[in-house]
Image 1: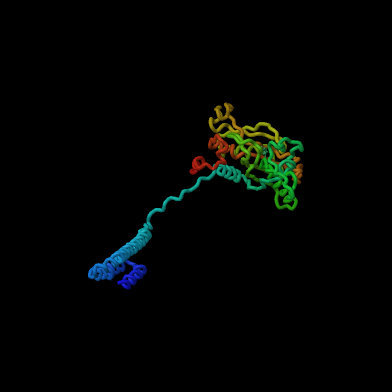
Image 2: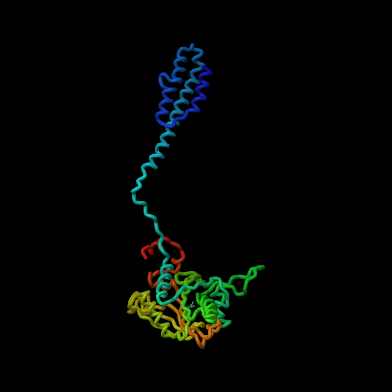
Length: 355
Ligand code: DAH
């Protein structure tokens, strides 16, 4: 009896079934009435009392192990069948789950619309660095050496690091007008070798100012700068380009108004208002009852700036303008808090899905 139990104990651990039929065959072989385990019980019945006391427990344990093994094999087969069923039951004609598409950021939408509008009158995009130097952000743009814009309050200066060699006065650009100086210096060379005769560019980008963050101010925001340099460029050309832009951006009925202003890099300089696109110019809380809202600064490029870039100001003239992208986005979408533009809150951003 000992040997037989031993042998079956080894066999039970080796049992395997690849199908329900194989499993049933095993059950019959070992556990059916004529099965090998059952036959041991038949022998057991004939044992004398003392022997029964010895073999009762091991025989029962053997039978239980066989039953448990059968259950294990049945479960393994079942889970295999389930997995297969999943793969086979896929409905290949079913419409796929919709892919969740993100929304374009309102500032990207506005920036691209500005670029698109000006591209129709010949402007192309130019790029420049955000980490700049004093020369390109201020000096070449005719800012006096003591101009308050350089003040620590407005400009983020990049700190000097011991052992790191970099030019003095490295700073984060405070306006995209800095790109003008780089592009005009290149243009001056092109004029000399005859590879260009005029310049018409748009410089979109991020700018930085040392301002406390609030609903109405942020330490970084976005601008689009425009620049046109050619022979005989006039203030009337500037006005016409800006009127075209305002109508395209805010609607055909939009009127513009140019108010005299001052910027170091333009002469004369102006600020441009558009008729309030909320009340149509009648006066409302948004335009503080004036019927006008300011949207950009502009002017004729100061001859000093042309000369600083190597362009002969007696032959060439130009106009420039600069606008805040957030400002335009506010007017278009009525966003009251500037911080929403940089907080990545999907509840805000998803509202622009259809734009
Ligand atoms: N750079 C000015 C600013 O940041 C905006 C500006 C004004 C740009 C007049 C111009 C301009 O090109 O002609 O406030």
